[in-house]
Image 1 (tube, rainbow, N blue to C red):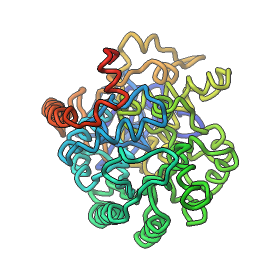
Image 2: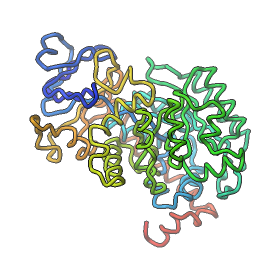
Image 3: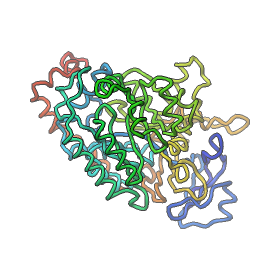
Image 4: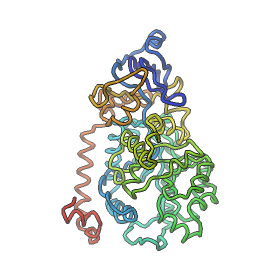
Length: 473
């Protein structure tokens, strides 16, 4: 296949590497050549030619941190105090869902992100042995792990500031599922599926469980996904149980190294951020989600002073409402400009890198994905530039393509998505999944557990239930 005649945004070099009239040649599952349109068409022939005049050809987005199943409760935990969001917001509602419900929510989320150009999904969720089937069917590239914790099913018994009632049997069962996931699916489907271990957070796992996870990760030679210092409650719980703050604890247990993908770091002190960054670990930056959940901004700027392994993640629908990288890029740029009262911070080219090549680097996959270069895997999207909000287009002496994409695109402009050389979306149509059926299935699932939720004695005490009763929602 040859995509020709468009603006090719290679993401090679220190910036975005734009070729004004370029082409990308794809053979099998890899990019064979990238360059000037006339040169590529002279050098190569193809079974299929795609005219991309008036369009942008880009690497697919790499979303480093998602919880796709949570889309089944999209919008059910918004506008709450950060201290209430998890245990009085999302978890009580999720506790009533079945595995089938979660699978349906995950597919909804995957469709949403795919259609907006995400090709690599950092899916950190449970039960991943079931959810992984969605990624296989949809044809996504994914880096997956189960969320392993020892929290009781009835989270309404948890009180802030009191040591969590952890249950080792629950933790062992979840860890066993994570190990089975790795044994069955790691590097499967032509390498499209990469598996890791996923301790949810240091406050939700006993020291014994954290030690066992680290030993297993070493044994299976896989990386670790983990929320790190994501809340004040996490710090409180770790101090109560071990006398140590989370980062000191996981450092002692051998987690701080390039094989760790650390999400959020929202409540880390500057010296702790420096410690994690200098260890070589990657950072997941989810600005939309953390702003909605707690009105805070994770310390990405502080992390960048010591490491460039920072990638954007959309997190989950009850803490972001959407999982589109276009939205994530724009908000990330704007909130950092506002924070610093400096419009030069986090420019458009930088956040586009954080959604592509730098995100790939954060996952340790920059040699395979994240930019358009001969030899890399063919994860490519085509963006229609014809809508009014992306025009006019200037090429010289000022090129406005990148700012227009980052600050004006909405996601629906993505018309073609190619993953591992396979066309997954063609002319806006998803070829691997029936979108209409998936949306209907998710809504049918919601009706079932909505009825069950209404029958719970504790449901009326949920903050959003109170706001609904008053007519605000």
